[in-house]
Image (tube, rainbow, N blue to C red; front, side):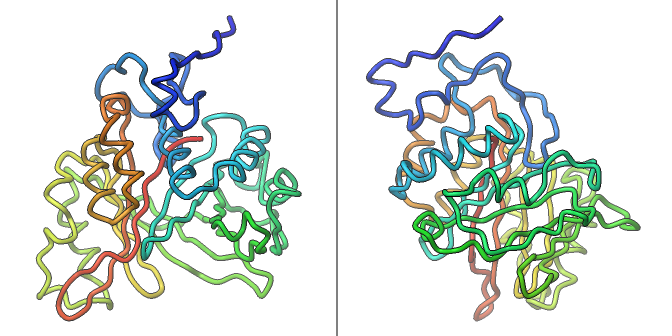
Length: 302
């Protein structure tokens, strides 16, 4: 049976950036790895999809009209709820990354060439696909400049990491000049693998761990997080908190300096997102004996 179209009221339209982003009973609940999770609470009346936050970020950045056809092209090719989005902020500037999974790897249904084809005329891409490689996911990071014609010159490919004692992967940047290793990342159970998390974070060339209070990295306000991911990148490290509540994500967005319009929308409508578990991550530098956030990201489903 086809579900009827949603008809928000005029007052609702004032706070919902994309009117079709009301949750429906058939919606799946998936994290940023496209793994299913159980909702922490029942959805409130008028509950929203995570994609409402994505469209809100477009509105804040003033790029809704140019981003909407790109989102439609992605959904037309991959279907709904099969693409992960990430809103990123560094130095007050937002960008948007989209993650395309296919765990069948070399038997995948869609690859980089499909993204280039699907967004032809919307995004200029200077990257030559290498779809014969057995990646299980690729990602594309877009900026406002890309929407205005600046060529996309890098696509990231994600490979498995056999032999690791925990779930992990390797990211390579694909450019026409060649492939570049960008980072390793490792998934840990936050409740049972605290010592491994600590060991992984402190085994780093980027800061002298004996001078750093781990609470500045493993934030106490993230209590109850299910999974912590540690990523070793070229110039700094990153930590991701996976499956946190909406209130925790609001605190994260405020702490990482996202534009006010993003945090205001979540704060005003938190009850409409409370049935979700969110994923967030941040890159940090060590300067003058202190940990400093460099970049923040939060994630959802398109």
